[in-house]
Amino acid sequence: MKMQECMLLLALGLAIWILGTVYYAYAGHGVLETTPARYWASFAISPIISAALCILILRWRHIVPSDWAVAMLLLAIPGMIGEAVVLSNLGTFMPRIQEASGGRYGAFLFATYAVVLGIAEFATLRSAR
Image (cartoon, rainbow, N blue to C red; front, side, top):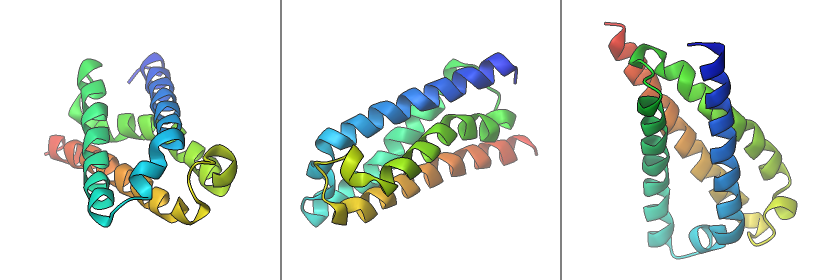
């Protein structure tokens, strides 16, 4: 991948993280502090939507599957760094979410990044055959 493509993926990752964080700052309490059924449904759906968005970006940019692991890391790294800051200061960045919901929010993030990066790694390994 060219440097310009790498920078674009980092910028897109940053934009996705900002939008997602703003969404959860305002609507997260309705997802995290709700019934168990609604929480688990959202827990399952969020990684799928995130993975689909990232795959669409990689296809839009015509990134070959052998580069998916690297490309997906470039999309994920801004959010992973940003969420470390948010989670360590949850009350400041997400005042509508109770501090006790920080673990649930962290679990959402962990599952989402694991699914997205796992799919990318699988695609990269599969293309190497």
